[in-house]
Amino acid sequence: MPLIRARHSSRGIRGIRMTTRTASSPLLEVKDLSVAFTQDGKEKIAVNKVSFNLQKGETLALVGESGSGKSVSALSVLQLLPYPAASHPSGEIWFDGQDLLHSSNKELRKVRGNRISMIFQEPMSSLNPLHTVEQQIGEVLSIHHGMSEKQSRERVLNLLHDVGIREPEKRLKSYPHQLSGGQRQRVMIAMALANEPELLIADEPTTALDVTVQAQILELLRNLQKTHGMALLFITHDLGIVERLADKVCVMTEGEIVETGPTGEIFSNPQHSYTKHLLNSEPSGEALAVADDAPILIKSDDLKVWFPVKRGLLRRTVSHIKAVDGISLEIRQGETLGIVGESGSGKTTLGLALLRMISSQGPIIFQGSGIDQLDSNAMRDMRGDMQIVFQDPFGSLSPRMSIAEIVAEGLSIHMPDLTAEEQDQRVCDVLEEVGIDPASRHRYPHEFSGGQRQRISIARAMILEPKFVMLDEPTSALDMSVQAQVVDLLRDLQAKHNLTYLFISHDLKVVRALSNRVMVMRAGKVVEQGDVNQIFDAPKTDYTKALMAAALRLEAAPDGVVAD
Image (cartoon, rainbow, N blue to C red; front, top):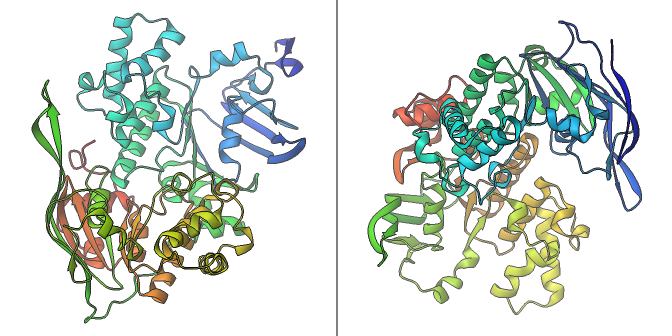
C-alpha cells in the first residue's frame, strides 16, 4: 500500500507520496519538470516540462550547450537549487518509488550522498582546500555510517585504490592543491561512491581534463558502474563522450528536451535541427598555409625553466622541478605552433617563458633581437607585440570594469597619446571585428555568455595589433559549437593580420583545425614534433599514440603511459 502523509515545510504544506515499485519501473523518473527562478520580482522559466527516466544500471546523457537547462534539471533531482528563489511550477521526480520533489529535508538527507551521489564539474572548487583527502572522504563515511577513524581509513584506502589513485597511502594527507586535475576528479568520484549509490549524477566531470586522463576517468566510471550496478545520469556538451558512454540521450536546448532516443539512433539518424547542429559543430578546417620564405618571428634554444625545491631550516635548494627542460623551437610569421601534452607537462610554462613573464635560462629571439636579458621596463615596451589569451575568460576579465574599459586598458599604456574619442573608436572597431556588438561595450563581463567573454578577451589582445599571440587553452571551457566559432574567428584574424600563434590545448580536434605544426610535451621535454598531419596520422612515439587514441576514442590510454 502506498504511504500517504502530510507535513509542514518551509515551502508550505505538501503531501509526501510513495508508490509501489515493480521490477520494470524506472529507478529515476522525471515527469513534466519545470524550474523557474525569481529575481527582482520577475519569474523566468529555466526548464520547461522536461521528462526522462533511467533504469537501474543504465546510462542516460543530458546533452546541450551552456544555458540549456541540463545542470538545473539534474540539481532538481536532489533539490540542490537555491530555494525559494528557485521553484517548480510543474512536475514530479520519483526515485525508487519516492516522491523527491515533495520530500522533507530529513528524508532527502537519507537519499543525498547515500542512494544518489553527485560529481560536480570543477573538483578544485568542490573540494575543501583546508581538508585532506582522508578527511573529505572520511566525512561521508562518518555522517552516513558512523564509522570510526580506523574503519574509515581502511574504507578510504580501498576507495582510492578503486578509482585508480596510485600509492593511496601517500595521498591520505594530501590537500586538493597538491593533486593533479585527474587526481582531484578521482577523489571526487571516490567521495561519490563511498556509500555505493544506486544513482550517480556526473555533471561535466571531464571538461577540464586532458584527453588521456579523460579517457581514464570514463573507463573508470564504466567499470565502477558494472561493478556496482548503478545508474548514471551524465551531463555534458561533449558528444564524443556521449557516443562512447551513454545508452540513451536527451538533447536539451532553451530549457526543453527536443529529442530523445538510443545513443546509436541519435548519432546515426538525428531528427531535430538542433541535434543536427550539435553533431555538425566540431571544429573543422585546417591551418592557413605559411610562405616558405616567411621570416622566423620567435625562437629559443635549449630553454629551461627550473623551479628550486627548498627544504630544511635554512631553506637550502635540494633539487629542482624541471618544468621546461631544454626545449628549442622556432615559429615563423603567420604560423601556428600547437603545443599538446598532459597537465603538468610544461606547456603553459613554456609559453610564459617565451613571453618573458617568468624567469628562464636560454636565448629567446623575437623579431631578430634577443629579449632574454631585457629588464621589465624594456619588456614593457614590447608587450604590445606579444599578447596572451587565457583559458578562463571569466576569471581573466575584471568584474569591476566595463567591456570598454577592459579592452581599452592596453591602449592607455601603449598608446597614451590617443584621445578618448580615438580610444573609444578603436574599441568599437575591434569589438565588431570579433563579433561583439559595440553598443554593448558599457556592460560588464557577467552579462555575457562564455563564448562572448572569450571574444572579448581576444579583442583585448588584438586591439594592440600584436604580432605574436599565446593562446592558452582558449576553447576548453566552451561548448563545442562555440569552440568551432572561436576557431574560425582566430583563423580569420590570423589571415587578416598575419598573426603568429602559440596554441596550447588538450583538445586535439581544435589543435588539428588551427595548427601548422605540433609539439608534444611530457615532463618538461619535447616527446615528438612535426607537421600537424604527420603527428596526427602517423605518430612515432608511444606517448603520442596514446594521446591520439584517447582523443579519437578508439581506446583508453595504455596503462603506465600517463601518470597522474
